[in-house]
Image (cartoon, rainbow, N blue to C red):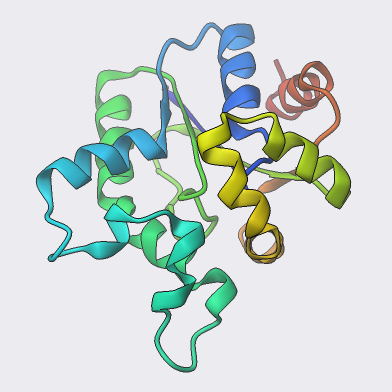
Length: 192
């Protein structure tokens, strides 16, 4: 039975770093970021037809309709738009019997459905300390980190939303420590 492991968190939470380290420990060769899936969808769907695919989720709050929570609307809307691609990748992995790890902000618990015919774990990474969160954001490529730091409160609000969704949908919440400790904690949870 294929394993489907989802790793999500706010921007700068270390999703990709943890996902790749976990894949190495588990011998999983398929690690796909949801930004890659979004990039493929962007190539197929025009900006006019789906503007949320063509913008950063963190910047989409300005497009939020009246009455919507501006801090999380963009993240949630983009996740819903990327979901068909995520579902297709998961379905293909299960069909082929191949383990897969997906990482990205688009993996909101409750939006991504638990597959019936796979071993499944949904992990939400959190960074409680705001100073640490800033340090992790500044460790990213300059082109990615500067606007994220400027929009840190949106990212922190999204983290709170993810934690609420994790609680409602029985996802594993993991406070970030070190990559090694985080991976060990996940392995314990998996029983590996």
